[in-house]
Image (tube, rainbow, N blue to C red; front, top):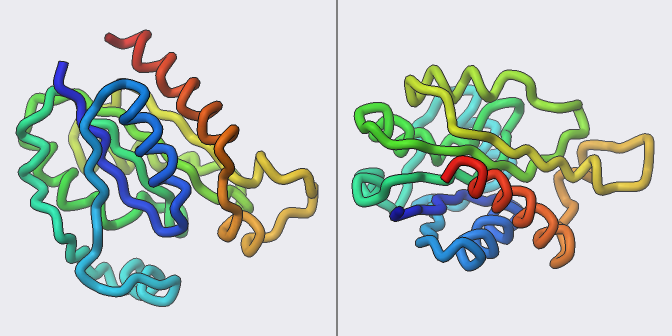
Length: 172
């Protein structure tokens, strides 16, 4: 099976997960990059004004794979916008996918993203995995600044990859 790990990362956490996962399962990995400089301000403005992403990568690249593993954060409760052009192409294809995220979680778990995936891709994922940096912090009074600046370490990355690999094995 030809597997693509397709990732977008603002802090580097999703990139770490995607890169290590691709190596572990022997998959291709493509990191989505924005043509613009991305900041918290541009992310917020994109969400408020529903601006489209301007990626360097062609979304049609997913045509070449049997399984797509999307890896990206949540931004204000929504899946990171750079994935949307790929979702638009994916909805026209008969391909399986999964969604993985490393996100902050200071405001709680995201309960709406699965319905967003169904809306955008027109089918449910094989599986999802959510990892929240809030769960990795020992402080009980967690602030958004702490979760948004937390960088996962090598051991945390390997633990996440192990969990995802187990799920992949269940479905393959």
